[in-house]
Image 1: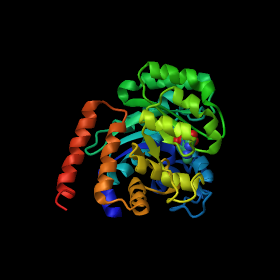
Image 2: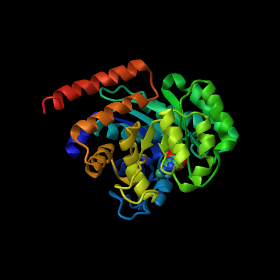
Image 3: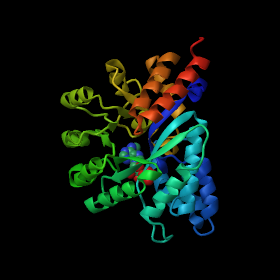
Amino acid sequence: MNEFCVQLPKVELHAHINGSLSPDTMRVLVERKKDSNPSLADFRIPDSLERIDDFFPLFRFIYQLTDDEPSVVIATRNVISDFERDGVRYLELRTTPRENPATGMTKKSYLAAVLSAINEVRKSIVVRLIVSIDRRDTLEKAQEAVDLALHFRSQGVVGIDLCGHVMEGSFVALRPAFDRAKQHGFPLTLHFGEVKENMAESLELLSIQPNRLGHATFLTPERRENIYAGNIPVEICMTSNILCKTTSTYEEHHIKDLLVEKHPFIICTDDKGVFFSQLSDEYTIAAKTFGLSKNELYEASYRTIDAIFEDETIKQNLKKIWSEWYKDNLATQ
Ligand SMILES: CNc1ncnc2c1ncn2[C@@H]1O[C@H](COP(=O)(O)O)[C@@H](O)[C@H]1O
């Protein structure tokens, strides 16, 4: 089944760049930097999640690796190649613009570096960028992120995300920036109900009419009804939820409700570098946990195309690729 899930053409819509670096990419970046920052060489990069709380120090470590533009280019390029090898045909990466006065990297040069890697010519994957706004940011910083998204729009920025530490910051304070992004026609995806404490702001989040939601783990019956009625696609990150302990078991994962309702969802990885799970692994887990057949997995993957932040032409092109793959691989079985 795992081999099938690698071959299956897939869409990835919820992948934070700095959470998606493979151990190999981390090692390449350490090699580049260890002369100027010898302590980096002392960090033992794990090849699998050996301990459940390994990913917290890992994040701090990764930010030291991607603190200058050439490293950001390498990191982004390698993340894209990882997804391409795993059978992803359309990828929306997301990242929070970051600066580092020590290396002269500005938020603008950071995004320019990310987009230069995104726009390298590739045969079998289309890549776009979502600009993330961190919940902890000030409104001024959030507006700056929207300015940058507008500046780089013609280079592949297709939407805006609300992310960051689930227990900090507030959407209400940042809302004017999201309103402005929306006025400019940017689709929005919001981390939603990732922990119980987020439920208090759920009405406010939905009132901006987001185009997709991330996680949507904790829902009151009213919010569930709103999401179903609005047909809002949900980005599902099962392993991430298990490791962050917001879901106790795969069997209990809320994707089961969406399967029953036939509500649109997109299986995603979130942070494949810190949770050590490829997109094909997430499809395999869904198949095994919920007894999905190959045809059902194909259908689930095909439906994700409708949720992308791109136009009809790209959607139709992708649907053609999927249909041809189906003819060659599943129709005869
Ligand atoms: C596990 N669930 C999650 N929930 C919320 N935000 C998350 C996240 N995982 C990652 N991020 C957000 O993405 C950043 C890393 O990528 P970028 O530097 O933006 O590329 C993290 O610092 C956090 O703000």
